[in-house]
Length: 352
Image 1: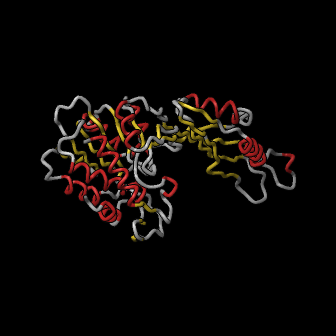
Image 2: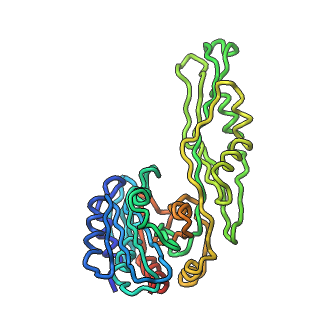
Image 3: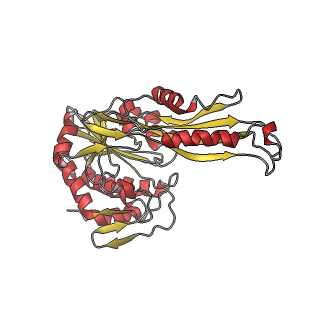
């Protein structure tokens, strides 16, 4: 069997921060070429490898090549652990994908292996969306498995994400005579107090529990040290369960929090970013088989992932990969050999 930890280390040693994936795409393309059962296509820094054996179903296995530019992470092996930038998120699983793509010449399903760029930055720049725009035929399939770190257990669906900025207005005045004005920062303070008390919704979908989160992520205001501020703003990120649409998420955040604070004529609300979530899709037979092969444990994906992109294409999908998601982007990020072996074994059992 391939030394998966060594292959993962080769990948981790290739710098591939977002928009800098050419070298790792070269490595992936070279690794896949020479396998006669694979049709390999390069689109920018995205690499797609397909079998075309006339099977009744097609399974897509996808993973991103980029990492975040986290400083202070060094690559090293400690026993059966590989530390380094992207080890868990998600070069360990990329190593598994590469090995299986080469091995599985006569799979149970037709397979599409998707290695894509720019997942860690603004969604509009995603390599997966680049493929969708230029070669949508390469993303046709019946079910998808996304190699996000999940500790070798299925994480179903994903929550949607909404980021909004609320601007609260005031009226300038000298701080010696504040009654002549209206302090926008003080107004914002009451909004923050209400936000801290806001009940975070929990919902169960197909037996999977999702926990919503609403957090302030940026704040600002004021223009002079001796003036009552005439404007203050706050950016809020709402991670909403996949039974809600973006419009429903906006309506809930407005009704439960923002509408009672945005009550001056110059107040405003902007939608900075929004992405739909994805339902669990656990009733697909391929996903049921993967669940059995991986031990039967399933939990909710609380963050947003490209499972939602596949769901938007009408393709049921789940997250399944090596590494602890809580270590992603962490200075002590690592992947364990046992995780690589477990993911490799479950996928091989499913696809062989």
